Image (cartoon, rainbow over all chains, first blue to last red; front, top):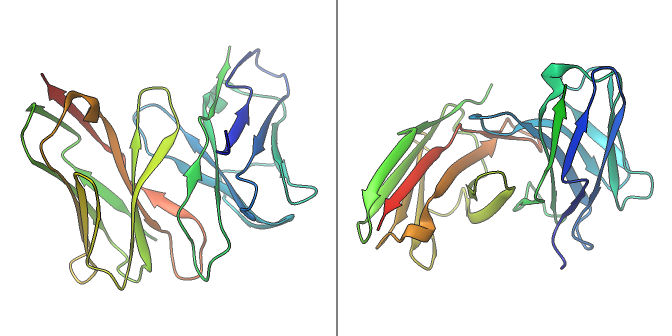
Length: 115
Length: 113
């Protein structure tokens, strides 16, 4: 399968714990995005990487959230001291290098439930 | 700030009907617009990407149009099938020079056999 891969697919944790999600983009895509989606809403942008550089961050990305893409390939999104409001689907997407935003390809998402 | 609205929020049609889903956006200085499909509990599947220089884009039974001047896009689905049941989302760039997309809340489509 050469699509965007996310792991784990589901994570249940207790409030205050740290969680980390991993995303493996389509191999030839150098752009990688994280979005968050809650029930009944469209996805909301969190952050964007071009290669290993984090070029955009949303105000939604509080200081408890950190994202990395150390070698310009896979990316991790860590949430520290989780809160119940962090419960959501975390979606990763990638796109090829184009002049402007190209077509985005999403993974299946990582669903987080904070008890 | 870009805002994307999708109407209706939900739609139920009998199998075989043709239907139109609507998407409106407030910032017309967009360079493309993308339509996605989302099945329950799943990620998003890209359906069509329309560049600002295009008026329409077609894939199989799907046809998407873009009218930047009116801030509208439509997704036309021909001869609907039960397998088309899903939530359809449109997304537009959030602003000039931004790589982020602003999504609508989606239209939940149910095609009744």
